[in-house]
Amino acid sequence: MRTALRLVDEHGLPALTMRALATELRVSPMALYNHVRDKNELINLMVDLMLGEVDLPTNTGDWTTQLRALACSIHQVLTTHPGLARVYSTKVRIGPHSLRIMERGLGLLLQAGFRQSDAADAFFALFTYTAGCHQMGRVDPRDYSALPSKQIPSITTVTAHLNGVHQHGRFEYGLDTLLTGLKTTHNPTPQHHPTAA
Amino acid sequence: MRTALRLVDEHGLPALTMRALATELRVSPMALYNHVRDKNELINLMVDLMLGEVDLPTNTGDWTTQLRALACSIHQVLTTHPGLARVYSTKVRIGPHSLRIMERGLGLLLQAGFRQSDAADAFFALFTYTAGCHQMGRVDPRDYSALPSKQIPSITTVTAHLNGVHQHGRFEYGLDTLLTGLKTTHNPTPQHHPTAA
DNA sequence: ACCTGAACACCGTTCAAGT
DNA sequence: ACCTGAACACCGTTCAAGT
Image (cartoon, rainbow over all chains, first blue to last red):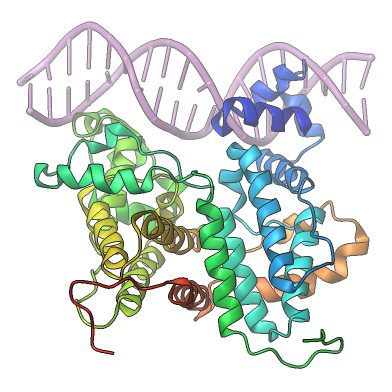
């Protein structure tokens, strides 16, 4: 599992081949199938291994700062594993580490007084945004190909705006927007442990 | 292009094979390479064909309702083409239709008085969330496999929350959260055509 | 319980050849 | 300018056989 993760980190997801992984492990390609049903299961296990690196937030501060810390930790882990990040949001994977994250995220929202359905929707939004950030690659210059020449000038301005997708702070902007949106919309219902105003 | 799109809509992205598309068109597999450099270009063209179905919002209402309409239109188009939707957010594609959308989205934010960098970040957040929503599939029951039995009870509660990912209104919840977040954060700077308060 | 080599049914794509 | 068939270099995976 670890060498598979290293392989993807170094050479990208398409470099992850049963054959390549096997030779990396100095073993026959078929040997892998004694430990894993198929490539899909291998990837699922890799994703959960990666999610083990996510730090759960400490129990201090209000719910927005804790949610923010959780999302940032996920974001950072996905940043260090860009190849696997691309596959993360593809499916809601049920592994021990992914469950741990979902329980905490939902728990924070429920504790904050969100109704069950709203908590699910809110967590889904945060999750989707966080994972979605890592799906996008750079603009490929070859994609300019079949463009009506009339639009060509606008390319430069638009891509100038968007090509800094992984600029520092870009992720945080949307994250904070989501959180202030949640805080604004949210009508807190009384809790068992209300914090002193 | 159209038959390729139909093929993906009906049988999913993995069914899109140069060979399968060729036989669908009653033609030799190699004939396709006279119209397209490789499969990657084919997919890029398909994506832009799909984006042509997006309706740009009418110029009525304030910027949030127009942005909302734009995002909803994208969402609806992605919903009708789930196979291609999965590939959409993978890359910032530069086609005539995708440019049209980006120009409008950025334009609305700039017109609303956002600074250039904030407009880019805000559009990126909306774009990421909208596209990211269509990356996730259902939970696969086989993924319960290697779970420590201790966590099994929490599965049911967590998946019960999250498995309705495509429930009606789920997308809109996060979208509206983002928009109210933008509205709340935003300090409108004076415009050339200020609306009467 | 674990590993192996050969083989099968696929891929995308190149290339020489045709019209 | 467009199409074709054969072939190449890959895939994931099955299967019978070994230890």
